Length: 89
Figure 1 (spheres, rainbow, N blue to C red):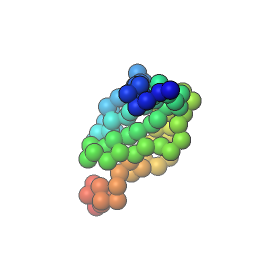
Figure 2: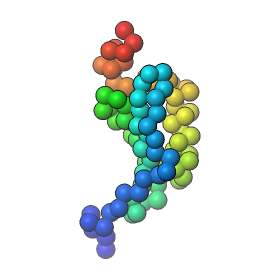
Figure 3: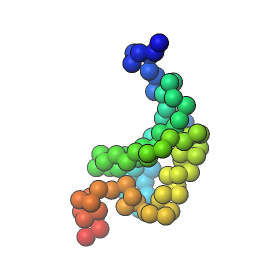
Figure 4: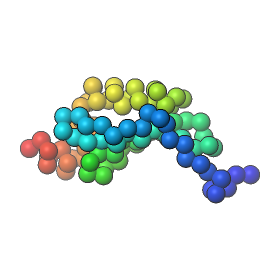
């Protein structure tokens, strides 16, 4: 039986730090050795984390979801209300 000590976090080679329109984001795509689903987490330059609810069957699909979200919702998708006011008002 596995214990917490046996959990290994595996990071995708697609993890990256990116700058879009002057906003810095860290894209983290990872899974554990106990679960095959890839987790997509975006951390903005203020430290706010956005984690997508559903895991992805492949790390490339997680990256595609990041790109799709930026195209559809813009960078505001990864900002809190307070951060949006600070940047856009």
